[in-house]
Image (cartoon, rainbow, N blue to C red):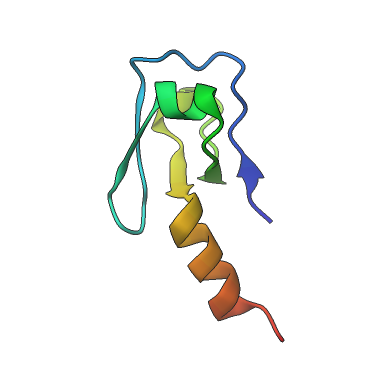
Length: 67
């Protein structure tokens, strides 16, 4: 299961790209409460981690979970 990016350490000017749709989520949006899922964490350089937006994550869960 993917983790949700915490607001801790996120700065408003940061930019995150969804790995599925390439939409941009800003640090300001994360701080305001938008969810961004960590698909693959990069511990050495966290900003280089792989992220998925909330919309794509919901679609991902629908495709890969049983009803």
